[in-house]
Image 1 (cartoon, one colour):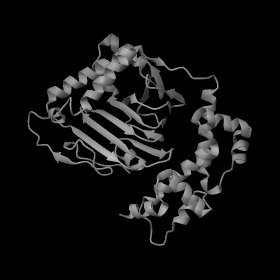
Image 2 (cartoon, helix red, strand yellow; image 1 turned 135 degrees about the vertical axis):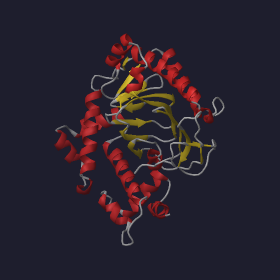
Image 3 (cartoon, one colour; image 1 turned 60 degrees about the vertical axis):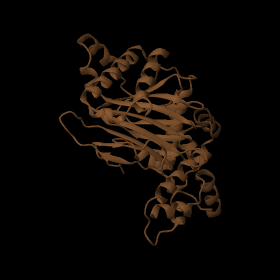
Image 4 (cartoon, one colour; image 1 turned 90 degrees about the vertical axis):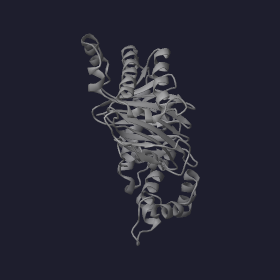
Length: 352
């Protein structure tokens, strides 16, 4: 499900407000104005947060306990999409962006490290991927990142012939974590953030084509500098990539067969590894054991269904059972510990 917005709308309220809400007013178009949008949204649920971003098809699963709080500030113009995303809890993200775009994200603040495309993401690195490739990200708690999605054609057309040829070779072919000199990363980060901070930039200025062109040129200059100077971040250990692959295979296998109540023994047989090795893989990559991680993902799938309008005859226990939860009191307690509310409260809110 995607949220559809008026491309010629600008948010006029930059303070916090109720869950996943934004106040917008239409902009009258004249010969001196250009299409753009500027949104400032807050959310109280990881699914609402995932759906708030235009042109992205993604799923968020909350991994740590507590009440989710997210904020998204987004500007769009001339095919560019620039946004700052802030989340207070660790989240597993999977999805796709626009197929014609190059996406680069630079952490602003983060408590601990993240995991992007089976590589460690730190505050001194950046994530990068072509929009036609799916991505996966496990963010830490209190994660703040600024992201730009730019059509590759726009990026290449703005360069000279020599630079154009060099840049084609530097564009990532798959999701990756990149390292570049700190001054170049800082310059790109500051440039993107300045567009999203209301104390530095008035969003209504985006109505002027000249302003859009100036911002686009500045961003492209920084992007080209970073791309030409960046290299793949090294893996923390030789085994990290293979163990990340094991975690991905185990997670996909278990979730595809949720109704079968897949056990750790089943996973070990399927992956042809020992129980100890499976546990090592999850602990090194995700800092948790496979039982806890897979249970958390299944609880997120339950919440996703409870937030949808349910038929009159449907019962919470039916949804819980579908995802392998048979001990209902224990299920309710685990659900409340993770999300801060009982399943019945989620179901009531979903009907509203």
